[in-house]
Image: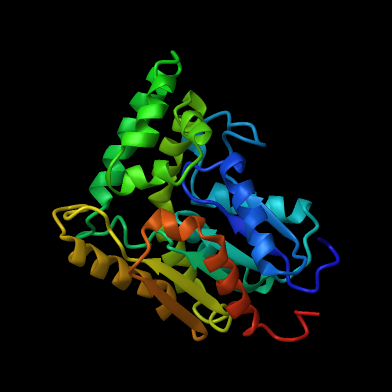
Length: 293
């Protein structure tokens, strides 16, 4: 909707997602916005509209940031725009905002992956490292076509927070996730996720002020389904760690809002487009009137 009076929106998707998962969500988002809005989504290379990279091992925070910059430039999107980062996409969106603050009118992070996720004391770091190895093994198995039949079982019988991802997805997407390319993509994203926190720290060290007045809103999902979700933490300890880790985004802004949702799991927060649209409307009230025509 190029005729939109609102700033355009760039949606940065989370880990392992593709256009087949994101597009229906964004269509709902546009409905809830109640007026035309120009929106593009960025999905890291892999399955969907883009070809996989020649070498998955070359993907890192810098290559993803530059690719996002190139995609935005080719889209001829009006600037400044609103960045909307979901899950792990929140880290990349935040890094982009720190690097190119002149491009960004506002930023919304939907239950973003904390930048402290690999620091000592993190309950999730070891889990993600193990998942990276497992995805590499599963990708080799998937290349022989052995994992597709498991998609039905994963969709209907998986438990815990990982199972919540499958339950919130269309069964066809679960089958897509069990393909060789998607598992390679997921393993690659888990590897380069390690590099983003350091890039964010470096960017904050180099320039700690130019981004601070950009409106920022963090949606934090604090409902964990297991009694001991990760790292031996209880459900309450995990919620506290997750909420405190999200304060990193808030502390580095002078115009930030934080919405804790104790009734939402991670995936429920990501897929609730009415919640995301309301968050976007809240951020729009903080954006200068000359940007909202």
